[in-house]
Image 1 (cartoon, rainbow, N blue to C red):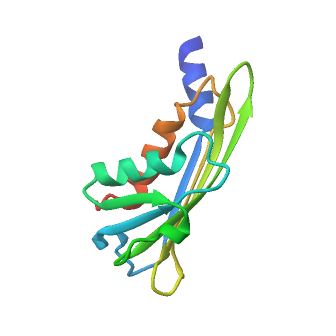
Image 2 (tube, helix red, strand yellow):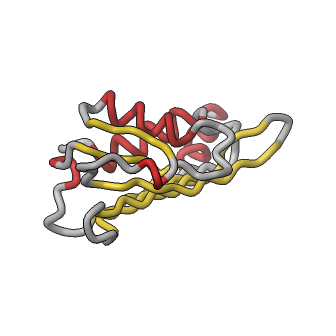
Length: 136
């Protein structure tokens, strides 16, 4: 009984939402660039690009000045970390923009307030990227 209660509490603590602009099939884009934040001390941009490559996209990451020719989508992010006997990610926001006109075509948000009930950062990144970019 206690395990069931714990599982219910854990499910209620984590929140993941995504929104896409209607009629924008972002999964049909093949060339994606993840804009690396200057303060990316945990390799989030490269984890995101790796997940996109694993899904079949031509994806790379770096400073916006390194934007490859032919890029169709630019992915930017904000990550929040905290320390509670170890450092862990508690919040992850993603914004997907059209590279030609800089208009937002999709956003995602993942919030996990506790490391006890959550996943490692790579799992959070993977779940949100899969929900945004996998064609279902």
